[in-house]
Length: 117
Image 1 (tube, rainbow, N blue to C red):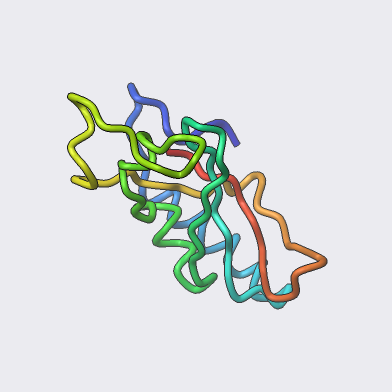
Image 2: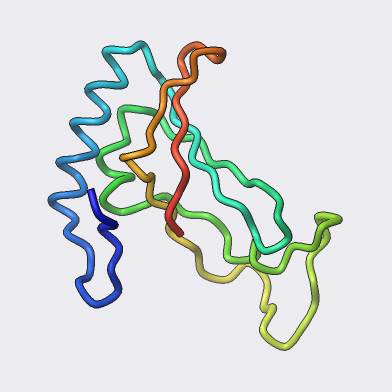
């Protein structure tokens, strides 16, 4: 599947929900209860949000929130101060890359997908 996040095309939330529901069904059949969504922040630190597999269709369509303050974290996990660093106001939306969704064999009950920000 090509990226459903083309700035010019907008999001087809109905299609994303449909794909998320199909993925959730496959994950439930595999015994998955939770999906870890990860992204790498500007300092190169991996960040993770976990969602119940039962919410995967909604998360695929609408995303899950993450603080925009992650864009100001330093490698020491402290937050940079600056003109554009207004604190945790607003949020990022993390959408799972359903093409990369993977059951974690060494972590029963879990699956993982990188997140589009």
